[in-house]
Length: 86
Image (cartoon, rainbow, N blue to C red; front, side, top):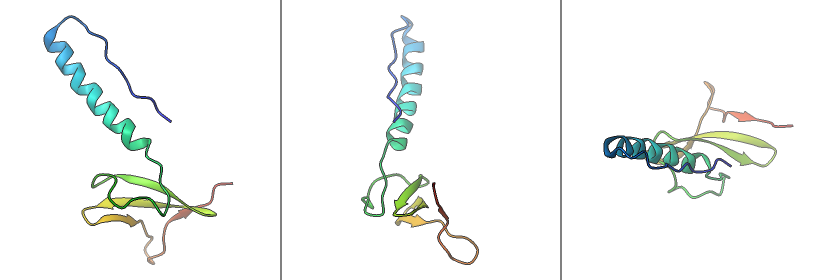
């Protein structure tokens, strides 16, 4: 699990604001990466374009978030792309 980042005050209002925005974006990525995923995970979590690895028993499957929800990535034959972790 990746931990959120905190910004110390630099004493310059412009720099503090700029770095605050950068840290907000970093922490948004941290929140996205730290989301657990399984085939039973909520279809409402995540943003369009997010990619996740889903634990599907003996294999892991790749999914991408679309405007319609999570979809499995498939190969040219239509089979789900999977990975077996030993």
